[in-house]
Image (cartoon, rainbow, N blue to C red; front, side):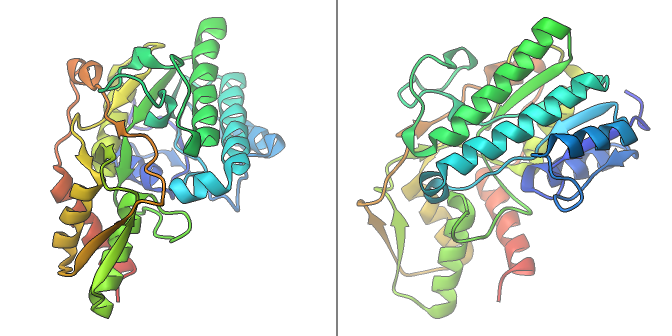
Length: 310
């Protein structure tokens, strides 16, 4: 792979996209093309076409997406479905029209059925109904996977689809309305520590289990598959280990230094009972994550303190 190949990173300011950009730069790729949302609205086909006509990227990482935690997904399902469908359709189709040599599409573990066997294998896709609390986002990501698959099949387009587990890390969204579980808990425990609150309330029973991966590890997986994998099959990217939300809350409270009580609000939804990826395929292809959950959380909290903490 030429180091001066023109590579477009869609969503370069987000958590996954910024990690991919750092990893590409670390590996010597020096012809990266990026645009902010203000400069290029990926939901507008005409803008996407004009961008590709002008820049002619050779490779594309499609990391742009509308994302959010369980609360945002419950409250705004139409937006999660619409915006992600538009982004995927415009970028994938225009990449084909302008001869992109390879496109890496980032999906999500939420594509798998709510009640599928654990750990979740790639072959379980579409074997049952998805989790209702994030149905809009899940359906959009399934559509993106299938769009890549069908452009591969019909046009011979070189698209690969990677399915990450729950990601966290630098440049995560620390917005109380939109945050995923890790940034939400980091904010809650940090604020409780600062205010010397006696307790922190966590959504759900604490029994639901989730798998987490530090965003820099995921970026390394993306570049590895970009350089080494060709094929239509989706690939799970994860640590291969999960923890309960209760265990996660305890780890985060310890890292933050909060010493109060943790209360679980069982009136709030847990979402899927468990989301653990089977990462055998990725491991057999030669990739494995390096950072432990605790190390990743420590690095993320340190970044949070530098950028948000008081």
